[in-house]
Image (tube, rainbow over all chains, first blue to last red; front, top):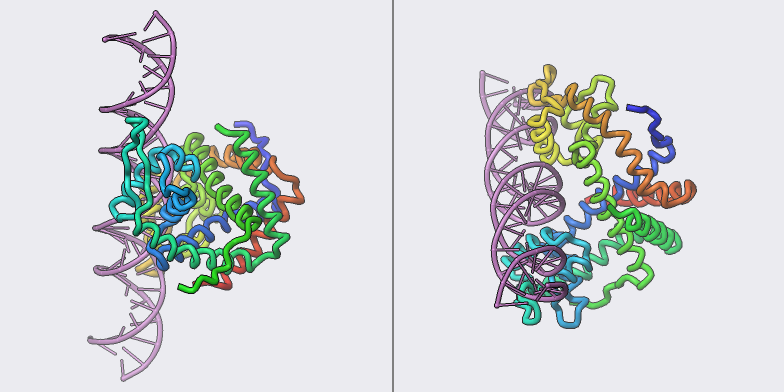
Length: 155
Length: 155
DNA sequence: ACATGATAGATGATGTGTCAAGGACCAGGT
DNA sequence: ACCTGGTCCTTGACACATCATCTATCATGT
């Protein structure tokens, strides 16, 4: 094996490790707050938000999958579990016999409406409070740039 | 329910969503590259790196858990699976009858040594190539600040 | 009408993460 | 010697993620 690997410099490594660590910690913290405040997981929350963003409160599987960037299969499993808990329902699609809609239920709405304020508060408390508005903008800019780069380098 | 929630401004929301999305995409991409290049998951990789950082190639469960910030139980399950695959081994601890060491095996070393260069290359290609060195420093600074804040606000 | 390939979604197997409960051992006081 | 409480690690149950595979339906060309 050729050993001309461009290892990370100490500086790069420090930034990289901080970034990775932050992701892990943040996901864990927000997830556990959501869980104890509202009995929702991160994926549950993302799905309910996407559905309430729709006037009709429903979406085709495909569109929902695209909106939150879940793979088909992952979404299918996730929706299956959420149906069991009464948060969403599955509806036949008249125009396309293969397709199906996911609809938010009344209970799903109650749950998300109760959860959202606490979640936003947690985001403010855990993240926004740690940096200035300008810095947060910078973070957003960098994130968008890297995402764009990732999508261009797509597999 | 009092409705004085400080919702995110459009600007804040844009940054927040980009940040979250980036985390998800990046974890997914790096995980899948690791998986196809080396048959390792992110957690596998983190553990092998932590063990090779030790001269002895071994650590107590506690210390390993602290080093990579895994909960005890999570680590225990993870190590169990890795033992099955021959990447690490469990060793009794003479000084403390309750404790145990995790040791990297020869096979574990081979695996990580083959995986690391490709992983670093992926990090460069997917992330470092998208931003300037100064920007990456900034990212690191912000990440460290938020982590510090998270730890101070610890549960 | 009918083949053919593409698309929508479901399903089972396996690996991963979290929580709650448990078993083994240690340390300190009595 | 014996509690008692804490520490170290394991275990089982369940939610989640990914992969490969499957079925049903659609859309097109003949």
